[in-house]
Image 1 (cartoon, rainbow, N blue to C red):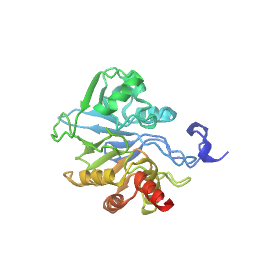
Image 2: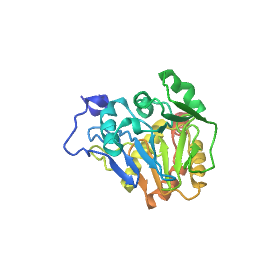
Image 3: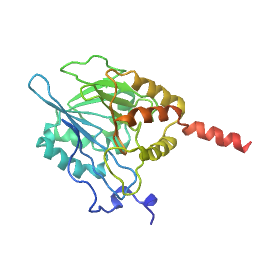
Length: 269
């Protein structure tokens, strides 16, 4: 049975699998499962914001149900208890991104959920009951101690209501499927290398609809202030350093989805 035909829970863990929360920067951790037997890693992030002497723990993309035990263990190591997760944001409604949302709601009935209106239109069919639901209708530009981040709509990347999250304190863009990638077999390192572009390109060519929507997203990212220094996608590897600018440039020119299909049709005529 090939890897391509296996479901995620059929892969066996290997001794090389990283364990425990993986630090991105201070107060930001990747708490998802890394599985060397799979070419699609699902990244869940935990960010602690500290303002006015207090703190707020925010989960970005609660992830796949296959990974819940690992996520729960990693979150507990960081903050002591799932009940201490005060909020979560969900880029879009796919089960690999939002599958654990119900567990987080059950763990803390007062949890705040932040999603776009388009995402909630479908996500509500999971019968989620957050303590507070905040629907975003567009980019929130004001940064305050109550909301030290801003929403960045990335329409059709790869869902109409996809919503990235920008953290200007650490200059991290939590980008959802945008800039996500397939990893090479067994290569589950956290930080991207230039060689990882091939897996990012392949992922986008499969799942993104057109180059024009990617170009719009790239322009939105480039307009963020202060300048984005880290891109933390929901799949694959975290992009840092000079690779941020390089991969933004490559993404701007990448033919995907309909672009490739149209070329294929033209070549058959």
